Image (cartoon, rainbow, N blue to C red; front, side, top):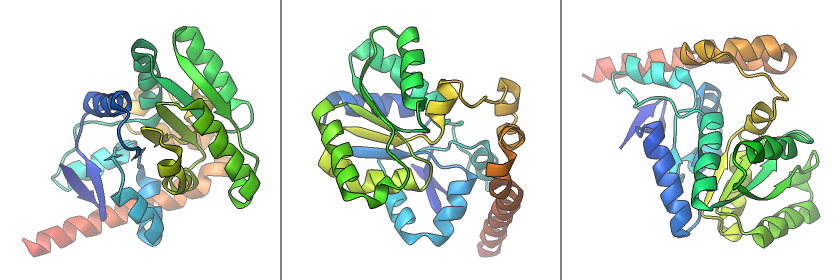
Length: 252
């Protein structure tokens, strides 16, 4: 079952249910699928990007990465079953992959992030099969030879789960354009998760994550990169949610 937040359909599954569905699909090696992890900024981008919306519509799972989505769902009286944070999901799936013998590939991140994340994850899970990492150069999406080389590397490695850290909506658009050809059972866009796991970017304390203040911590850590996203984006998201609630009340 999915619920509607500002015109975007979000799955109601818990973190454990999402993990289980992804792992089961990866083990079955059935037709390739992909997972998207929306937050408030994704919701705003989806309002004006029809192609991005179509990618979301066809996703295997659409899971709530941002606490703001949980608040919005509760306010709209269609509560979700908890947060499915992209970085937490990445780490949990790697832990399960190590137990189940699933192969993973890390694509994206800033230079060195995927390799450092691999080292950290292998230290925690010695049995983890990371069959490849690759950091494409800036502007790779406009370089046919580079795009072909990426696909060739991934297909040769034949992972069960592909984690893509290119930032939204670039990572989702790349996945949508390539997942069928790659034939990887599950592809997931996870933003800056490689950097967070590699300790290249400091993650907010647990209390800030749970209280919905992770955005504020990230804004303090990277103000020049994120000020527009949060200072301008958050009020716009709140307005969209208020508008949806008002429209629902009017219909009832």
